[in-house]
Image 1 (tube, rainbow, N blue to C red):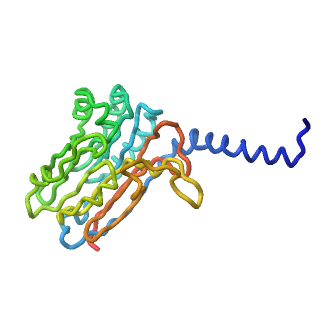
Image 2 (image 1 turned 120 degrees about the horizontal axis):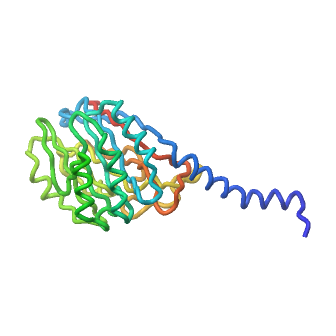
Length: 271
């Protein structure tokens, strides 16, 4: 059957568009590190965090098409920024803990004034091994699993994944003095609706990948359970904020479309 020009154009659009989009998403956008810089306003009650600069990364999924060079560029950018604190918001792997070795070879070079801290993602909980936690510890990442780390004027609290672990907010917050402002790390962003303690100034989350594949004028095509309400960016409720990063890696397919890998720098300021 001879194709007319019109039929050829129609078939090119139907089949060529998705193929080109997949190629672009896998070969270009997946490797294009996007740096987000944002100033988040603080209520007066959380003045202890004024001037703090935080770097946020997450959702590496390093066994699912992980890219060492992408992590290396992100680490270099963080070190050049001279941040106060680095927060890793979970899902270091998808299912294979052996991927922790090459990932931690890069993460061990992270430098910040107060250190690097991490929380668990659902995939991490589902495939947790002793070696998994040991790799992060040896790389200088302090994991907070229903635990808190205290400085002079504020605390960082990390909760277990709500989908894969056993988060215990009351237990973790009991470790925080009543007068201390709290930064909260929790992998799944929709948990923001359960945070009511007035000490919490900011929750840092990932999990959604920003959708990973987004449609023009529509946004994320698919979002995971626990990440449907707050897909990406900054949200605020009263005196408490939430920031959700799009993450670094990919899950299931090695493609990002209109949703590049993200490294986040947050400046906290009264306002």
